[in-house]
Length: 552
Image (cartoon, rainbow, N blue to C red; front, side, top):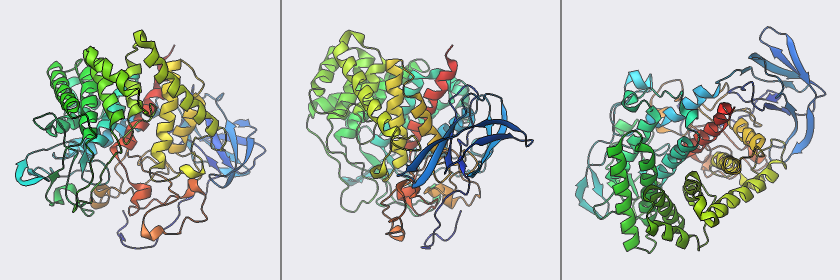
């Protein structure tokens, strides 16, 4: 990790390779594609012994406006022989990659294991964390922001992002993505082994990791059912290890969005945990019902704004109808009670984005929760949710066909967290595919995964430790302060941003194509921060793709 944290010097990150490949590799049976920067009359596949084993004629696309590159594509789906290879052509060569079954397993495990490295309130021991160890952090009582004389011991959960705060709405979104992935594509998790302390408890280590976050959330519920919005210090800590963050922790006022998201995710988790731990499932269900009762007694939007003197993440929202809809859906799924169904119908009378997958808009999580349970007796609701995802997926597919890299983001879409939108767009297509029983969107979905792990104009994997040329300097306090040369693996970073907020980058991207507005530098949080709800949709996406391998 670089030590010149305050230096204004930086270097743009662009590969010298001419052929961009998925750096995880390719399953023999999967759709396989690479991108060539420029023109080529032919492209050759070379094995590790230097033998030419396949050749093809690229399809020239032309100028891709988003990347500023002339590009050609090569489809080698028909090549299925296992081995290690690289491409060569007149435009250059590629990094080496592998064709092999099960290649997603290590990346999938790394993405899931990142949540263990984000744990707050416990020691990360060597047998579980390897070289990325540290003592327990943030174990002292927190104070209520509204009344500093009141202390409350709230310990655990996941650090939200590159900072050490914990936020209910962000956590609920991440947990929801993970639980829906499991509900829909459970076989994709069969070989997951996170090597965490609770591994032996249920034989489903990632379920235990989710429990760790949920136990923190349960502590954030007030006696009357309302849920505190966040737990942070007044300001973000500097780049120190979490055990050295000595600032006073505060618990901030309740909000209706936090309470609704809490109710939704606890009801959802209760449906899953009943298979493994019925007592915990009951605890979650009761907490969800208690939160929903508070929402019913308090129908007006209870907004959260950072109070004066606090500069940590706000996670503010403009309304709560989508959050309340999600809570009503999941509590109806869990209990079958008519009151919750009536509320679902009521909230759907409003203007709600029913494909958005969080955190700021969670209507898509409500729709996904409903579709997961196959409520065919209420076809009007089911058909609306299904058709909304289908319309969104069709629109995204048109966008994919407009660019040389085959992904759904256009010039104006590359802003803070562009990689999240890249992934969630693909998740929306995956949901449409799943509930329409179609393969129509699958190639585009693969294009989005490819982009995230190397098939982009910079030739970089935006997942730390995954691939060959991956991000090494994420905006993550532990990754900077641990003084370990290797980066903690498994984190998705925010990605290209045409309008970064850092003063060092003012005007630097003026003449740079949007897809290249990225620097692998710890200082630049609007390009390179990580967060728990950017990892979770990537996990959902890989679970979807892996589920295809279990079909007869």
